[in-house]
Length: 179
Length: 147
Image 1 (cartoon, rainbow over the protein chains, first blue to last red):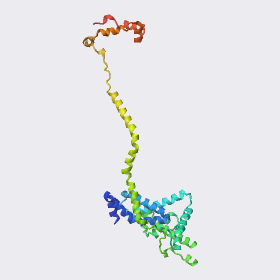
Image 2 (cartoon, rainbow over the protein chains, first blue to last red):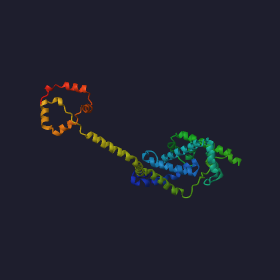
Image 3 (cartoon, rainbow over the protein chains, first blue to last red):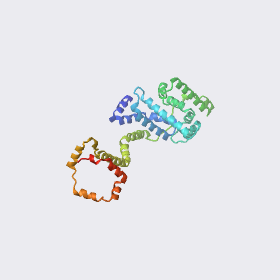
Image 4 (cartoon, chains in turn purple, red):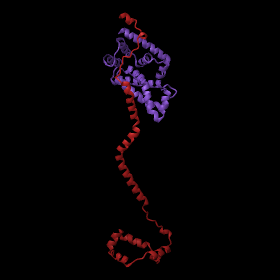
């Protein structure tokens, strides 16, 4: 079902729940994987994904129809991820590297993370990037979003995003070579 | 191996997802989300009666107090005020006519007066000194009184 049709059905009280259920089914995987790559842990990703869709539910009535629905949902998910990671750093009084080290350890030990050695190295190298740069990299490299779409989600200029992605790629290649 | 590391380029790597989810996770997730959104909707219909149930015992004394206050003020407001008669504006003849028509003394009334015969009792009863009583008597000239 197209987003426009989903929104029209959501606006009608009798079809609201059905439309929202369809919206969740349509976007749940994209949003979950976007979050999971940022927070690494499944339980955290599960909590945050649910929180994102609860926020979508609460705010969908105020959604501007001229914006794209999926970029709006991505934006909510991105904010949730960044808030979660910054609160994690504040909560445990940990510097950024220690949080990255904690997440890297999860990549090594978690039973629901597995893959080629080089792929796991890539994931650990990504953790050494600043959170926003990591988000830009994930949206471009894994989600294959256009710079214009990422710009709409993050409210950053396309030029800045291109530079950020390019720098992130160089850093990752450097981290993997050093490792 | 060292050569491979030096030649490593990200763009040449296959994009692989190393993260897994429990079986059937994406089948259950919409249900969990819908449960939470249903709970968000519920407070409007469930919480308000619940709150009212909790607050009801607190309202009872307040309502009782308001009822008492209402009854008290109603009684005070509706209590008949003694009419203030402006005798100064009446002619003596009118007063005398009224007394002739309405004030009918009987012998029992005079009998009552005899019980206050003792001078001490009268002074005590009236709470007036004898000098003040005399002055009061002197104030009125008997010849002014007409029957």
